[in-house]
Image (cartoon, rainbow, N blue to C red; front, side, top):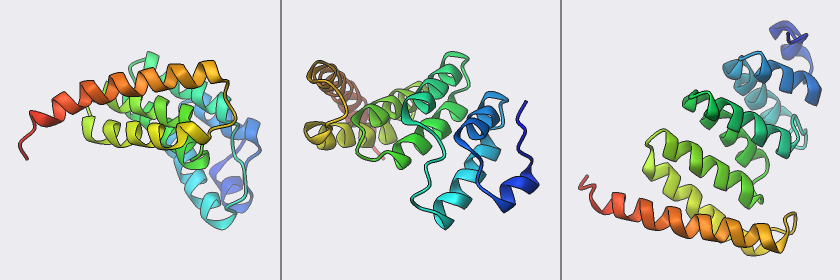
Length: 148
């Protein structure tokens, strides 16, 4: 169980372990509130490690908790905007939720930042490139059918 109460959260930012415990306990809305509060007050604060947050988002996605997975992966992409992997994961979450418009925006972000992402291997870059092209083709077709 999370040891951080909302009263504590109003006074100090949680540690990375406390933040991840809040998510593990299923309190995604609380985590989003904390992220938004301290992200505004202390923009340089790192509340969570990118890789752990990504894994947490996929756990929620695998459980079929798509809105929660989107919230988690969205926080991760916002906190790590230069990570092509974060945007790729958020793409998958939006696709799972049937939100093709936001998924396509995320694919565009992957393609835009992928060449400069120095935190991943060339092999992983190629994988993300292939994923992005596949998603773009898939979502582009779905978007063409949408006559809003």
